[in-house]
Amino acid sequence: MAKKRLVLTFPPEVVERPVVAMMVKEYDVITNILRAEIHEGEIGRMLVELEGDAKRIREGVKHLKDLGVQVEDAITDIERTEELCIDCGACTAVCLTKALKVGAPDWELQLDKDRCILCGLCVDACPLQLITVKF
Ligand code: SF4
Ligand code: SF4
Image (cartoon, rainbow, N blue to C red; front, side, top):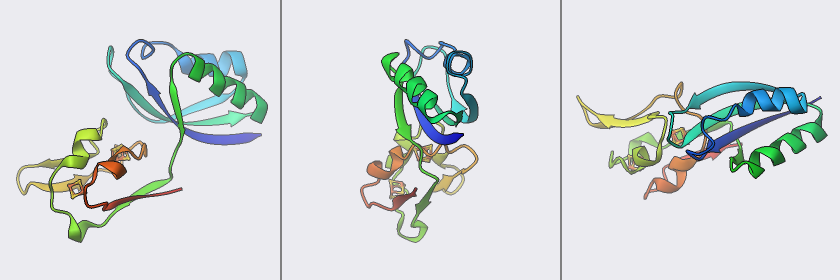
């Protein structure tokens, strides 16, 4: 049995397809959705853990890519250097799950790890390179 954690990004034309059911039915791969942010007609992102035969996982992932789903290895955590942050909000613009927010009352950057799907998009968005990932 193999296990793999992946971040799946669904373009709007695929966002309503039952890809998780497909992985289970067609590839016999157990698919646990750990976190998801999906809205009808918009780009959706999902952190999943796949469990099954390694070859079947590879085949299932290839099928997802053929459907237009972007597939990336998930990171395990993100870290930020809070004391150097200037609260510019650049990282919040790329965070689809709103795990990163700058707002009232103090207008300081807040990171809600429960909402974070560990996609790593915020890393490149920070002009001061204050966000790093752990694999
Ligand atoms: S990794 Fe960064 S951009 Fe992705 S969900 Fe977490 S906080 Fe948001
Ligand atoms: S982009 Fe960097 S400096 Fe700006 S709010 Fe985010 S972590 Fe802070």
